[in-house]
Image (tube, rainbow, N blue to C red):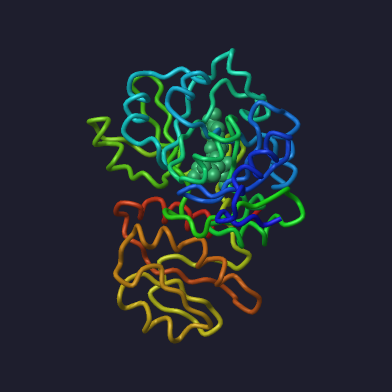
Length: 323
Ligand code: TXA
Ligand code: MG
């Protein structure tokens, strides 16, 4: 069921569904999440069921504030500085789980750490506050598909499998949150996302090395970071500076439309070559180009600046050999 966020009482309706143990999708500033009460194991199981997600893949828990997060996990000083700098926002922190947190072990997939985030989107914030819940929410797509940045994307993947989608329009950032784990002196960037590496380094006061792209899918560091993860149905060809007639072209920058005019279909991520604009358009453009008759999606090179790292990470996964 699609619920328009503009309707009177819309957030209250979705909050009531979550409190009753249902799963419902809602917008965050990164992508749409598929939410359930993180303290209700049966409700969390419904997330895995709806997504068709392997159950070893732990979920991010969304809370209202740093204070609420501190009831669930133990913060080291640098993680607290990251939280103060970027929350509410597109940063997820992996932290030691407190015994007293009461979070379902299905959320953490049995790990002794938990991924936490305070979202910035006003609807996500109202939903957390109105329900009074800690909300476990992975991206609201079928497992292995690209993340949804509109309510229509959620419906295309999950209609009939979930109780509701709160429709709040397109998400602003368009790629998932950045995931960071601090252990002692070690800061690990587990997933590139809406907060850039440079932003993190400015707070940490030192360089942060990103974890190598996961090659060994048998033992990924962050279990969700499987090599082939953000997969459209069509094959994806990276760093393309030309295109074949049976390919779609995903362009970037001012020259893209010339190449695009020779393609079977064309989308521009950002005509002015802005990585943040490109991130916001990425998943919707991939979904539009991924249609029958398209042999492959050829993608223009994207510079590794700002959110460019997150975009290239998602594109590399989309292009990875499928299992
Ligand atoms: O922007 C986002 O992060 C969105 C919105 C809805 O908040 N959520 C999202 O969730 O992208 P999901 O489930 O698609 O990705 C969560 C990632 C997975 O790669 C998972 O393996 C990792 O977080 N993760 C969760 N708990 C973890 C933990 N304890 N240690 C390491 N990685 C963890
Ligand atoms: Mg996901």
